[in-house]
Image 1 (cartoon, rainbow, N blue to C red):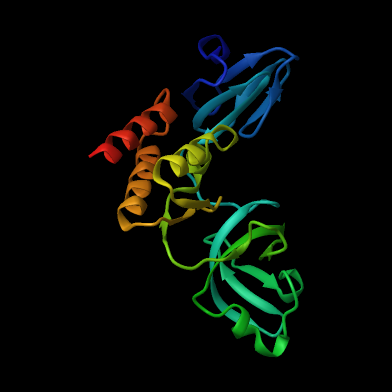
Image 2 (image 1 turned 90 degrees about the vertical axis):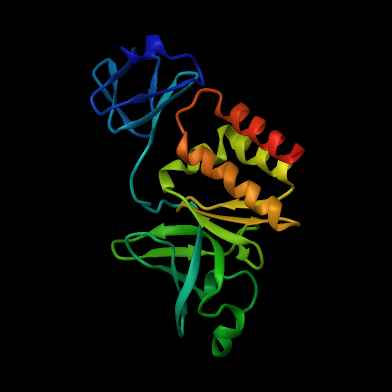
Length: 229
């Protein structure tokens, strides 16, 4: 049984069918299910135990939109009702005029958002052939400056860290603004090109070694050494 080998907050690799723990006092989270008294892994990934909750963070896979996700996408087309946004999901996203913050004149949609613009949006709802987006959230905006990098969406939880601990630490060490989209796009903007590149390198370190114990401390040490150079 995996549970005997893992301490709270420690992560180990599991495969589908692994018995993670046994007991009614434990709860199945994402990537797991209950079978009788046992909690079983449903996919290959990193086991995360937080108090009584068990979940598995996948190590590979495409982005599947979910309600409430923050995504970063590019406007690829317009129609009379809104904007078509590519969020690198199985289907294109749609941002209706009604889901923009503030008044928008339908006759001048291109003056508000145009083809090629990069937007931070929230997933409002997921339908069979489209993903509905909204900008009615304080975190949503059109991006300018900085640069985008793309990672495997399954690595996003590790980049964010427990309750945002990893990305907050990187922001503090590099003085960069960072927005992480759950679709795997990450926007980085700093005062210098060097700080932006350092942030990119730190994120790539996380992507390459997501299963390393004490990963936050490892990345912090890397950043501190680079800053001192």
